[in-house]
Amino acid sequence: MYSKKGVITGALVILMSLVLGFQAQSSFRVAAAKSNTVEPKVKKAAQEHTEVKNSSQKVESSVITRAEFSKMLDEIFVYQIKADMMFSDVKNSDWYRESALKVDAAGILKRDAKGNFNGNKPVTRQEAALILYRAFYHAEDNSQKTIRIADSKAIGGVYKTAAEYMVKNGYMITGSGNTFSPKGLISSDELTTILHSMTGEIISEAGFYTDDITGNLFINAPGVNLEDMTIKGNLYIAQGVGEGDVTLDRVTVNGRVFVLGGGENSIKLQDTIVRKGLVSAKGNGKVRIEANGSTSIAATNVAAGTTLYNATKRNKAFGEVTVKMVPQEHSVRFVGNFGNVKVESAKANVTLTKGMIQRLELSESAKGSVIELEEDTTVDVLVIRSNSTITGKGVIMSASIEAHGVNLSKEPGTILIGDNITVIIAGISRNKSSIGETADSTVSSGESFSGGNSGGVNPGGDNSGGEAPGGDTPGGNGNGETPIPNNHTVKVIEFEYVRYLVIQFAEGSLKDYAVTVDGEAVLFTPVTTEKSIVKYELSDRNEHKVKIVKGTKIQEYSVK
Image (tube, rainbow, N blue to C red; front, side, top):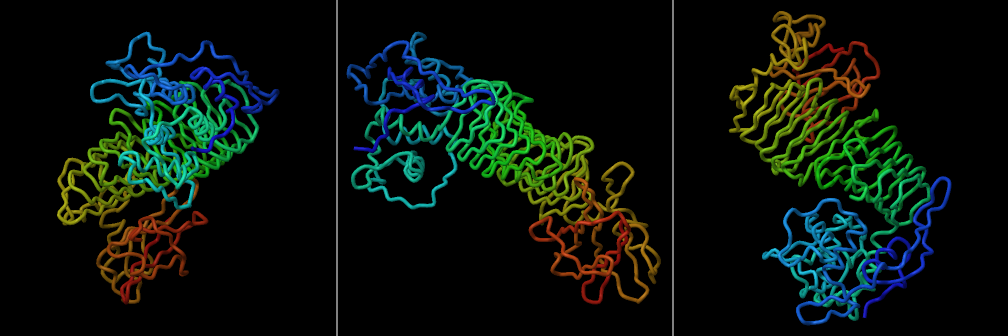
């Protein structure tokens, strides 16, 4: 026997009435509008639930079938996309046909190898755990407690993670002796309780909403505005929003935001805080998420085609962005300034249309990806660990190539190539031994990042040096000290109204050198983890003297 809650109220009462023939009166307020309270009116079921049969065996009304489960999920998420192919065992007249096609397209309740949906088949507890785990997008495991399931060995391998998650977070209860009974049938009462706990409250009408939410919140209608409110759980912008708008204005979400619906100009966050991150996973890959004002998102996971538009003055409004498991036919676009972006999807299509990415990394799993940097865009540090292509007129200040099969249409300001690796740069095959030729690369119109022999990173002046270097040109210092043979790159970069002094050491890292700015030791912060590239925030636009010392060897730079 498993613990159960009483009659479910609010939006889920409507859901259960439609699906299971329940009749109940609601006392549960969904949310409060600016001018009035929105009270969901519970309607009696349009028709009594028809008992279904599995082959010749009658299914008891207290258990849930796959057909009923699909209808419940469709009522909550309001899925918009249907599978193209019909099922072998579903008729056009079957009451659950539309919902079955939708949950199949969403990958929640899938057809079997023979193309059957098996709508009349009762759902086991382990199957229910996996279905809910998928439907709610692997919601973050907030529980730190350890669990013991006495019959865990009886749980099928594909269900194990989902079952443990559901028990650990209190959504599913173990029975006598901490048994999960994975192959036992889930009852309508238990599933109702679970869905109520996981779903929380539902907004299904356009309007302005301001009441705080103690659990999760679902939005499945367009034209919804949330203002001055706190959501203690997760926020789901469901497919029911369609191509419509949803605006969050001065909202704090203590959990995550899941963007499953919305249009190409429609999801807007103004002065909003998302403490545990945002997931973009709209099925057709056509949605734009815009951050304004002081919006701060802990991290962003892009799992479908998305445009991220950072209209704030902070490059970390979206936190660290990970592009992962994006369908190959989808495109991901960045507009504005961003901090760290990591691409993990194979054959990803990513475009920076405007602004700057501070650090862009293509991981080992991003094989075959294409990154386009449009004109007047910049990538400060590019790290490539898989075969990929970088196109466009944008600027790459520094690149580290750690994989074969890389093709760059434009030469970076500075470049590091791994051992035994060949890369195509501007149509020319290059390797580690030829990277010294990068000294003449142009990084923006009329500006040389590395410079030629009279400037940039190559020593200037005559052999005896001079009292002061010219431009970015290092020289002797008049004291007979020997310049370091391998030259560093020293540059001032302006990013988001802030000026940084950036140093890329010719070899080694910050720990190998004594560096001063205007005669003072300053605190540099790393751009790369190994500290081969570091930066220091400047407080003015004056000329600055940079001295890099290693033992008795010294180089001086003048930058502005």
